[in-house]
Image 1 (spheres, helix red, strand yellow):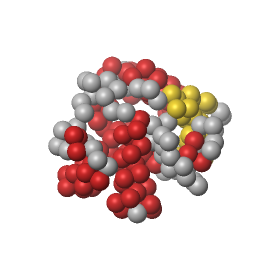
Image 2 (cartoon, rainbow, N blue to C red; image 1 turned 135 degrees about the vertical axis):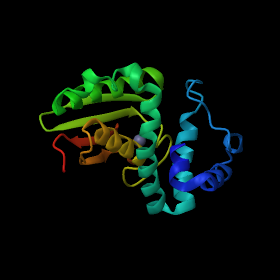
Image 3 (cartoon, rainbow, N blue to C red; image 1 turned 90 degrees about the vertical axis):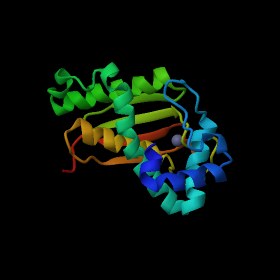
Length: 190
Ligand SMILES: [Zn+2]
């Protein structure tokens, strides 16, 4: 659905067809079927985006898809995680960042096969994806998990009530690193 917002229905159809994922055309897997969407499929969608729109174009789109995905996740899991409750919304920004990162990481660890470890330092949060669906079985010269970067950017934007943060993927399993690591500066840019 996030992808549909960014490249339109016909764009999604074209990507699915090229990826030989015709079974998903106008028939997206539901969130109620846990783990119905394999790592192979997630990764294939990323590489197919790059194939259709070129490496740079595809990666830019993946970032935007990640951003638009966030609201669907929030709708599905927000209240269960307590993120949409007033008590959470009233916390200070540093506390929200701390609690939000942990809660969001737990969501992946409990409901998907993606493994996330959150490491917190004074000024930064390190979001280590130890088993990553986005670059699953891919090889690249630079970090390629743009969808995760977009998702975190949007999560931070929402969490802070409209602030923009520096979010950068510094390491990627596809490049031979041991984790896909996304670094978040705790101080917003704006
Ligand atoms: Zn990755």
